[in-house]
Structures are given as C-alpha cells and as structure tokens.
Length: 140
Image (cartoon, rainbow, N blue to C red; front, side):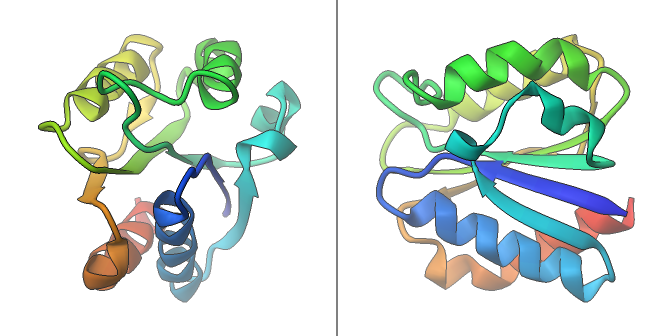
C-alpha cells in the first residue's frame, strides 16, 4: 500500500504531525511519502492508494488559502472512492475548520477515515496519538 501524506505548515506543527503519522503507517508496513503541498499537483492522485492531508486552521478557521486551498480545490473531485485522512494543528477556535473540511471530503465521495486529527499547537505531547492515527489509517 502506498500512502501520500501531503501537508502545509506555517509553524512546523502540522509538519511534525505529518512525520509522526508517517512513522505509524510505516510501522504497519505501508510505503509512505511525506510531501509539502508545494511539491504536489493533480497527477499525484494516480500514484498512491491513500491520502492523508494536513493543514492547520488559519484565519477564521479555514484552510491556508495561498497554497493548500488552491491545491485541494483542484484535486477534491478526484478523491471519489479514495481513502482520505485529515489532520492539522490549531491555536484557537473549536475545530470548525476540520468539521467543514470533513464534510467537503465526504461530499466529494471520498472514504473519510475517522474524524480528522486536530491537535492544539505543538503535537509533541500527542506524538503517540499521531503515530496511532497513521497506524490505523494504513490498516483500513
């Protein structure tokens, strides 16, 4: 199984989550590539079996709008039938950006894995949760 973990990170927290999620998936035997969104385009959908997308909450609880949102908007219709996991960090709010994102993924016919993993600020205290999320995602 090939998993792409695609993320955008402003402070490094979501990048750390991506790395930890990849560790958990690899422990389950998955082949995992961790990629910043700046290195991705729509062709990526043909190269992997599953996708984990990571983006922190920005502004008024929304996805980062310069790189991540345009990329995601360009591929979301192609996620139909694919296994998708969502994750990201936040500094304030109640996680509305994640709930909105989950609904968007479901509306496009993707197979949403669990609820998105949202961690407040630095994920180092939640490292085991991130690894377990990756392990479970690679096992579905």
